[in-house]
Length: 344
Image 1 (cartoon, rainbow, N blue to C red):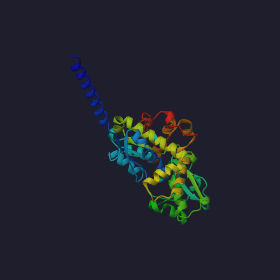
Image 2: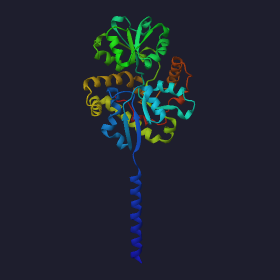
Image 3: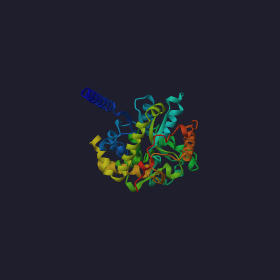
């Protein structure tokens, strides 16, 4: 009698172990398609660090990270479902949402990366422009869809002058810095660190450049964030939190060990100039990511009162209805505060 009972017990135990093993094997990594805002350069390095150090894998994620073609393009692709998550300008996301008639088609930001918007106007010292109001009567070169150009009315309002008092010259993105260097334009608009490094690359001396970043001159606008569709967020909350945690760790690594972040970038694009991209990365950290607010409150979140004011600025500049801030950003998927603290 004892032998059959022992046999049954062992058989049951083996079946239980097999079931557990099967269940463990069935838990496949969560796949996420992630689109960046631009080409692989220094500011994009923090998003590549989690691939290099294994954070995504340890978090149970299978992330595919692709270069971007501008924030406007990224939000459209996330909205269309081509990508699950995007890194894009939150203001471009707000404009996209304003065009969607169905709530389920709209996007929402869940991790703010650029607490200080990268929007800027860049000029030369010989133009005599030292502050935004000095741009009155000047000519600014930029592509028609450039975010800094389209949101220029917010900068003008914050500095007490009429945005229509400047002249705009339409140029291709690749010619913008050249126009400034050849003195065919008084200024250009664009992402601060991209335009600054681009102007230097085409021959404008470092000490001759004046970079007027929107956050320096009274604008409350936020910058780029991780964005996704509302429906995707509702059904993939744990994956978004895990992604945000790895991005936060990637930013912290970039702050503490920028050379390590650039190595992750180099592994993706062997043609980069390490020195140039490390400087570009450092500018993005200094100008947009590490701010007094993020030092006090950590990475990823927003100040609700400021976000409300920011949405009013965006609405006025783009001539769209001001959205409810709760429909623009959610803190629901943020990692714990101690996991996204800015290192001292």
